[in-house]
Amino acid sequence: MRVVICDDEGALAGAVEALAGRWSAARGTPCRVRTFASGEELLFETAGSYPYDLILLDIDLGGGNLSGLELARRIRETDARVALAFLTNHPGYVFAGYEVAALRYLMKPVAEDNLFPLLDLVLSRLGRASRYLAVEADGEHLRLEEDAILYLEARGHAVRIETEGGPVTVKEPLSALACRLGTDFVPAHRSFLVNLRRVERVGRTACLLEGGRSVPVSRGAWERLSRAFIDYYREA
Image (tube, rainbow, N blue to C red; front, side, top):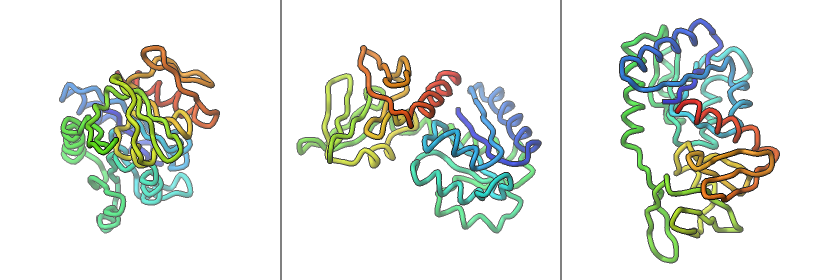
C-alpha cells in the first residue's frame, strides 16, 4: 500500500508513519509512506498525478498557504479515485469533507484504534477495486482489463487505447477515461497516459513499454512520470 502523510507537525507525521509500519508488520502487507510538510510541497512533488492509495491530510495545515481542505479540492480536480482522509483536532470539520469525498476523519492524536481500521478499509477497497475499464466502441460495450492496457492516446475527439489484443478507439475525452482508471496510469504527455505496470524505461523524450513500443514524453511530464515510475517499483 502507498500512503502519503501531509502534516506540518513533523513529530505527528513521524508517529503516524511509525503506526503505519506497525500495521504493515501486523497485516503482512507492504506499506510505503511518504511525508510532506505542506500542501505546496505535495503538489510540487506530484504535479497532479497521485500514484498513491491513501493521502492523509492535516486539515489545519500551517506550513504553507493551502489548508488541508483546499489541498483536497486541488487533488480532486485531477484525481477522483485516490482515498483521502483528514487529521484534525476539530470534529466540527467533518461535514466539510463531504465535497471532496473524504473517507474518514482521524482525531489527533492518531492511535492504532483509529488508524488501523482506516488502513484495513483502504486495503479492502483495493482488493475489491475493479481491474477493468468499461468503454463503448463501434456501437458495442467492451470491458478492457487494465493490466492489458499499455497506454492511451488522445487523437482529436477520440482516444486510442492500445492493448495486448490490439487498439480500441473510443469517443470519450482522455481526462474522463483517466478518472476511471487506477492510479497506475500516469501522463507521459498531454495526449498520452501510460500504464506504469507496462513501462520498462523512462527517458527524457520517450517512454519505452513492454514489447518494444514507445510513447513520447513531454518536458513538463518527464519529472512527475519518472518519480511515479521510481515510487511504483520501489514499493514492489
